[in-house]
Amino acid sequence: MKTELDVCLGKSGIPVGKLVFVRNGPRVFTQFAYFQDWLDHTDTFNVSPDLTATPGYQTRKPATKEDSLFFLALADTEPDAWGRRVIARAHAKRREEDSKLGALSELDYLCAVDDFSRMGALRLRNAYGAYLESVPAGRRATPPLLELEKMLASSRAVELGKESAQDLAYLRGKATSLGGMRPKCSILDEEGYLALGKFPSINDERNVTRAEVLALKLAALAGITAAKAHVAVVQGTAVAVIRRFDRTPQDARIPYISGATLLQANRQEEHAYTEVLAVMKGVCANYVVDAQELWRRQVFNHLITNVDDHLQNIGFLYMGGNQWQLSPAFDINPMPDKDRESKTWLSEDTGPVTSMSQLLGQASQFALTREHALAIVREVVEAVLQWRAVGQSADIGMTTQELNEFASAFEHSSLVEAKKLSGL
Image (cartoon, rainbow, N blue to C red; front, top):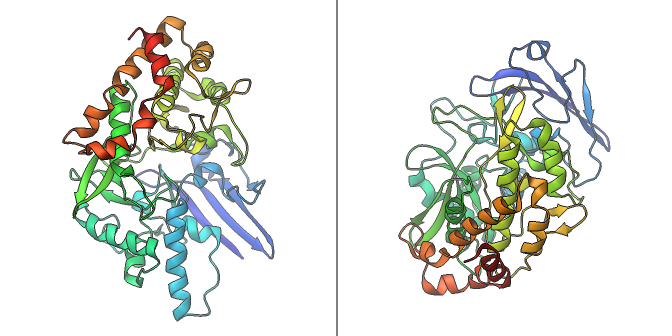
């Protein structure tokens, strides 16, 4: 089987190249070739770090079964685990009615993401000129915020294994590339901006949706550029509404890659922030600013026990002129039942982040003097110390009991150490 699709860029859909999906028995691989017009374009750039700007087809064969079949910037637009779950359930329902339908391929999953909300600026177009996945003219696949109630009910049905074909038809395609197994959907917020709606799971033991908004608000207080977020209450249920940062107010699409893509990292390998820094030096327009922000985020993550800081949870936005910048922080969650040990190592020599002294010991690698690093620690500590007040604010609305369930994520020996270091 061989399927060819055009890869296009941005709101205007500039043709960039040809994607070819090939399945020959057990052998499955993909190829990509840039169009000559794109190579000659005045604003041309490598849309993925693993695709060099040269004529002819380049082939991608994943190193392991866990790695994507697609070149990495395209892989960043694949549905996450929740999206795959919805797509697979919908396909299973269709197979019950049509036994001739075959199993889903990785290309099917990639193409099932709604074109309107596909992450970044890359878009897929078939031989008929239709963007994948798109809906009939005049209908927007991403529903308004008022339909959160319906999305919540459909997502809950999927979690319970009681979903109808209508539930799956409603959710299919509205998945996201950001964020694992938790129920979520692409939505439009109250101001009409593309956003991510994250729902509570039936397995939650705490109010994790309000806590994620709390973390993002605290990050902003700590001087971190973070995704804008608020809590929407749907029939008594808190939903985290997190605005997407890969769109402009005019709905233009901003190219996006993950930290894993920047590093061309295998999904099963351990990697370090210092490795990311080494690549950032060559591609980031404001390297020093981004490097210092990356260190600030590590301090913040450590002090709120956000330990799921894998490379897919670090992002970069394209600025033009072959240069990138660190994207706003996202997917930040306090985890009171976890050890304070980062997923991504601080450096290849030190291993994961486990203490404030370790972070300070590596601050110079992030373009920081000790004095500047201590000033950042003070700003982060001052923000984190407000966690209860911010959590109880009208914007977030956590109860005392809900806050107590997260206390160990915020109140611990590392915070005491950070306060001493910063003179608080």
